[in-house]
Image (cartoon, rainbow, N blue to C red):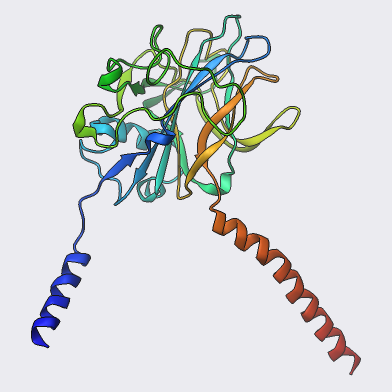
Length: 308
């Protein structure tokens, strides 16, 4: 009995000991969707990656693809929620937009078809400072961050001409909202292998005026509703690219509608975002009628008591 008890104590100690923090890219939700609008005015690429925190998010050079500076940048760029919510989130969703349109139109927003209720924190990646000139409201300027391709795809910064997609430049466009992106499966879950996605500072990335809007924002004629990031007036022009924007959530990813807008109607495709768990939806489906039945029973009981 003593030996068994000692073994149980030892096992409990091992289980209670803090484990090394680690996180993994979900390669099935890492890639890009190249969108095309009806008039080419809102053509663009949404590059994306979903990061899963399996044991807390560390603040060392090992986190987020080996770039500790990037982690600092997303904390500095917090615009919604708290850093505590970011640190404790199960998933971080990263997006970077590149304007590949052929017409002289700017992309003014990225809409993500998810609910604010599923988001615990959101912001941009950058080291922003607030400047103000006499003729302009305060705006954010500074050094942005962009995706860096895995070494298997050349390892270059994503965004500049010639490398607008995370992964191989030759890939299918997203034909529209159909539950699947243009390209996924980019990178590797182990950063030490040299094929993992990384992040790199890029002074050419648009940081100024990039703002998270918890919404909901609706795209006419009302086909997509969700949260959004706006890029400010005349910022994301043809050939330009945004800094990485991000949302944190405890909800698992799935592919949802995404929209790049130049005002109306923009272009649509599929991007990863937090979605309610099936169990939650089932509980809600059961809970609503049950709550209604309980209310009716209480109402009947109250009426019976009043009649006595």
